[in-house]
Length: 346
Image (tube, rainbow, N blue to C red):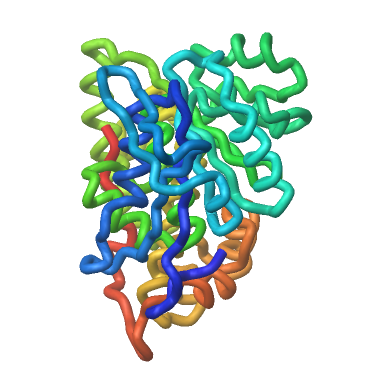
């Protein structure tokens, strides 16, 4: 991971285009990496539409077409290659595209596929022996046509050997924002998410879909939303799942069942994810000492915070601060509102 420093080259992103790609995924990729938000503090990106033949518009469903601006020869310059999903998930990608993907992975370039884009990576052989995810309705199709892929049945996005795959539609947004967060920090991802009016922090381990609430569950949902808001306002306190259940007026077992049904993740995992996100923001925005960051994020100790950073972000708090800090010298943060930039998902 590396942060963008003033005057640093723009992060180079290649949108890989060929006939059959989904217009929605093209729009998501363009919205995240193709919109200039540097006036709001977001990093600079250099998004290129790469195709085998840049002189030929790439047709998409609905009468739309994408005009490429670079050939496949540009891919060695890319920091990230993003493959859109497909309208027909068995669409064969052109042989030069598959060869280019293989060479890019061999070079160590990060590759990400949205939704049915996993089928394209599988055609290239890049998912053989690796874990991958796609839309829940396409899991069996991917297993049938690519039996050497270890298909994960339920996640929003996953990574294996620098290859990222995502589930359908909104999960593509989640993966794109996660890749921004991974390369440029939580604040950069939050800036883009606010501009897109979407949630900046959904972890890849959440379920792809949640149960449809009944009228009774709707009332529970109001209660659970209030509980999540309460938790975000009191992250610096030693909250437990039992505490949150008591605040909701439920038994811990009933609370956990309703919470998971509504959010797609367990109360404990959600609480730990919010603590990590709060610590990320404090490390980026302030120069508070590590024990104080751990206290304000609710970890209790620097050791505990370091353990969760290692398991969730594969880095340490100190390394994260070195990479992503935007705080001026002697900056400090208020003692409350640590996690306030996360919307309360309903």
